[in-house]
Length: 79
Image (cartoon, rainbow, N blue to C red; front, side, top):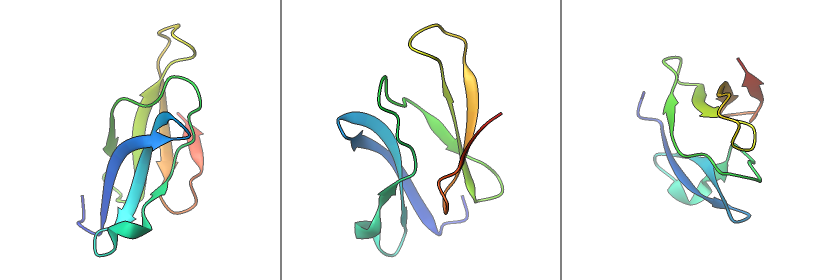
């Protein structure tokens, strides 16, 4: 949201994951998630400009869990 980065969904090892890149060098995009099963369908930026928030269930059980991923160190915290 601060205009320094761009984010998007794209396949990583064949599964949809979240990528982030500096707005002035999109070729340096890197995945910040590593989902290997169902893929991530939607996400949003946190207001602190350092985290991306997404929800994910466990193999279709529909018990949704909120995750916050730091865009710099890729640490995924389940909230």
